[in-house]
Image 1 (cartoon, one colour):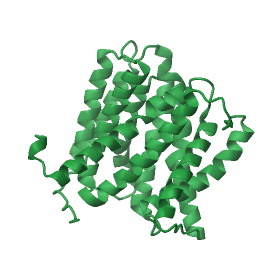
Image 2: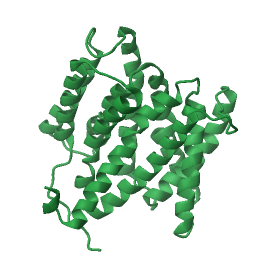
Image 3: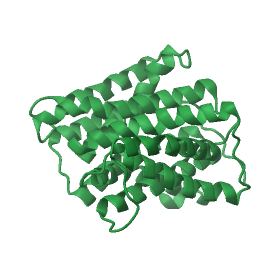
Amino acid sequence: MWRDLPRERLGYVLILILCGAGWGLGQPMSKIAVSEGYRHFGIIFWQFAIAVLLLGAMNLARGGRLPCQARHLLFYTIIALIGTLLPNSASYTAAIHLPSGILSIVLSLIPMLAFPIALAWGLDRFSARRLLGLCLGLSAIVLIAAPGTSLPDPAMVWWLPVALIAPLFYAVEGNFVARYGTEGLDALQVLLGASIVGMVLALPLAAMTGQFISPLPPWGAPDVAIIISSVSHALAYTAYVWLVTRAGSVFAAQVSYLVTGFGILWAKLILGESYSPWVWAALVLMMAGLALVQPRKPPEPVPAE
């Protein structure tokens, strides 16, 4: 099969796989990051700080321009809040109580939750196929939450609503950008600007709540996990945006499947998690829901090199 693909297309497939693997690594790394007492505001501050260092170097290498007018600062603030600070606070809190693989499945709801929000904002038209996809995704969550099925401890079910906060905010973020645009900024500028503003917001929150994490040694597994998740997210996001511009949004959207699949794979390999048949059934329902809500339109032309 691989030999039949043009070399350029094969490169796009490999980048898509790397994006899925990088993003999928986030959930098990989150589980490790909170395993010894670190909490959300402290982790998020360093997540922002590492992203600023990495993305700042990339932006500097290409000229260093980062617009900072009032409208840009407002946009950075909104994206920092709904794209990282609020959803990640919920994710890291849920990661204390829920298995990493379950969190990966829950995050797959993002495109499904985006659909009703897009309808409410007039950004999309009703589609029975996509509504069915949303229903399948919600059925997967019900299957996970059902007593005596997926969760190793029935008390964990109360943390599922907390885990659902993250995909809800990510869905809002996507629709917000689709409706209001990016103020003329490209993806790297948006992520860098939001990371700078987010770092400024997260630092006092971490300090006031006693959650600040000292960068001084000794360093343990949670510190390494924070670095790995921050770097992998920044690189995967940048590669994904590049892939959208080269191979088209329809092709790049397939990363949703890979993020969930790799999230469960990494959880098994790194954390040794095991799942009941009900979890695998929920995963099948979620993948079917994703297939139904993915965009369906003619393939977009790939720009020439």
